[in-house]
Length: 129
Image (cartoon, rainbow, N blue to C red; front, side):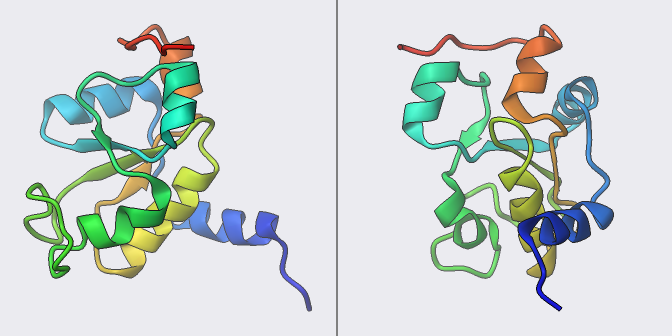
């Protein structure tokens, strides 16, 4: 049987405890790290989250894996709470599931992505376009 991307997305989301915008903001206040995976052109167009780490999707596993030579300073161990976001919450679900696959058990994503954050009236830096 052939699997579709919708199947893969549903499987990824089934193992995540996705968070909404306000919960993501509250968790950030408690030490969770927001990671914006959108490409620069999208941040320029849509705006950005103040204080979020900017790691485009194709680098995220290497930057957040605490055993990787390419890790960022915040990737101190497998217990860090990472909240991944994209524009609308699709690719971030796949990224968060991938992070869980490498042992980052507190990884999740922002349900609805940047668009949900913005719609909730949470702080946003405007884009340049």
